[in-house]
Length: 212
Image 1: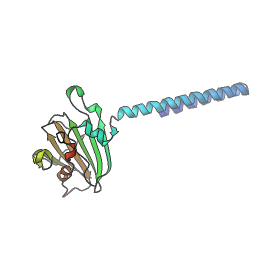
Image 2 (image 1 turned 90 degrees about the vertical axis):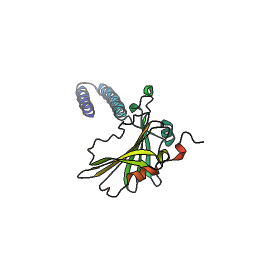
Image 3 (image 1 turned 60 degrees about the vertical axis):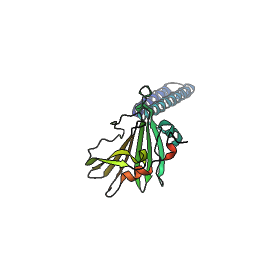
Image 4 (image 1 turned 30 degrees about the vertical axis):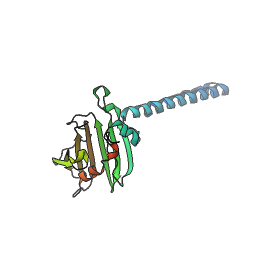
C-alpha cells in the first residue's frame, strides 16, 4: 500500500512540474497547493486503511484484570512475583449463542521466563485453547492440581524439546462450571522445571463464584 502511494505521489509531482513549466507563476502556485492537498488526503487515507487492517488482523484487545474476571467465572491470577503482567481477550473466539465466552489470556514474566495462561468459559473438555502447534516429546501425563477444585482438579502436562528450546504446557478443566485452562512457557532449558507448581500458585479463592 505504501509503495502504491509513493508511485501516486511521484506521478502527481511530475504533473505539477509540467504545469509549472507551461503556466504562469500564479497557476503554478495554485497547482502546487492542490497537489499538496491531494497528497495529504492520500496519506491520511492510507494511514486509516493500514490502521483498520491491523485491527482486523489482531482480534486480541488489552483489558484490565477486572474485565478479565468478568469474562470468566473462576479465573486464575498472576502468581506472586510476576512482572510485565498483561491481560487480553479475544471475543472472536467466543460465541454467546452457544454460551462460549471470550478467550482470556494472561501474559507475565517470572524468574526470567515468559508465561502465557489462557482460560475460556463454556469450552468443551477436549477443546484446545493453547494456540500451540508443536509435536510433544513427552505427554500427555496425568496430574492432579492440589489448589484447584478442592484438590481434585485433573490436569495433563506436556513437554516439547527442539534443537533450540523447551516448551512446557499444562492444561486442566473445571467440570463444575465448564472452563478450560492452559499454561505454557518456553525457554532454552527447562530441565527440573515444574510447570504445575506455577499453575498451583495461580489459584485464588477471591475469584470463586460462590464465595461471600
